[in-house]
Length: 618
Image 1 (cartoon, rainbow, N blue to C red):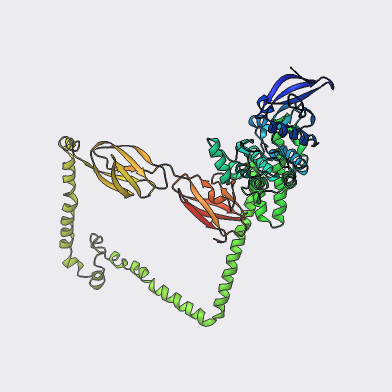
Image 2: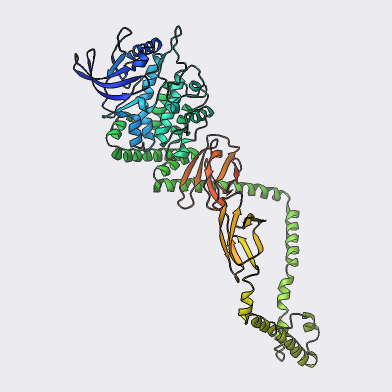
């Protein structure tokens, strides 16, 4: 198929406005990409003008990371087309679906060239308006290029073109103001950039819903999940930059592509990636080899920076660095030892504070002088006097041991200790036989007579066993978690308690245990004719919720300390942690947290919000 001097060899893509062909320039003898406008759009004058305006705008953009425009048809041609350089490779969408950007810092390296391209385009007055992974090409040698300014607009004060009547961008990457029909500006591209940045950094989109309409509502509502909660190994600086790009209000969003580019460079420098383009090229060619190398490089940079922060007394920053090391390398012994060192230091600081308080109190007491000391001595002596009688009483049993003739009365002796002291001699006259025989005769029948009836009652089992098969038997049902739960037996509400004493017929019974902290526990319990105790329990615990209040800095990091390994899992900053769900293994569980440079313990309850006061030193 021939189109002027261009031979169209193979269709390689198709979009909402045009079909893309791999073509050949018969005059310059080179492979090109030819974008041909759909025939049904070619007939519309407004679309034709938009297409022609796009060609003129993009032709002015000369940048290493923007697709070069070689030629375009013009308004007088029978078919509208645009000729650009041909990229041998794939789109960022295809590459990202096939390969995870691990560690997440590789996402910053991949998108730094796109930020530079946007900076150049925005300076020329061009807004892309359809920024998405499908419009970023990844060349085989690792070079990335921004392409398809298919619905770009020129910010010309005299004649500004805006799209009307249809959504021309991709819904998942549209900025909120674009959805609302407001004019797009460079910050709209930065929001779309943020959606790609979030996707590459975490592996999932910031907004997702089952239908396009629901997706647009999600974008308008804002409030994407903190990337650190999706992938804990992402750095704090990178996560904050992603969220700044995704701000609902353009005024709160990152304001320019230049600011975006500088922020990305700072993130990469913090990670120790000094040559991001070379790193990206190696990653595209051999992801399995370059990824682990970059990970080790980041770990080394975090350890070095964390040690410097620790030496400078910046414990919060040091813990953030060591926490990220453990997120990237959970078995890193150096990071674990440094974290333990910080914890020991914080404990010593607490002890020092308590000691200072004790010294202050002691000083106040010293001011009271000798009278206070004498008063303390008198109080101590009174206390000892009140607690000495038990020691004297313990010596009282000694006299009976000195009377060997009556050995038997010793077990009866504790009842009347006064007679043992007042009349030791009349004992053999008045109390030899009567006190020995009467208690013995009265004790033996009472201890022996009750036991035979029990044996006799249990002896004839045949007549007794046949009756409980028909009649109800006592059954005690206990909730093992010691929580007052609501119990249903055969759909009958038994109320809320920990121990239920019921009368149930032998055989199977359906039960349901309900508690607000846990899922329902349903099952069948088998009631036997003899067994009386039946343990039950609530269902699996719901997640617990943590809220941190009264923090001096809302960006203070919060970590969950894993009990088994001691690793610190980053939850986010103070402003974000209120939305974090903490998995529970039991309905009530004590967990450890690190807030800034302080380790705190808190008892969490499943399904409930627990608050930690950041200023509380306990």
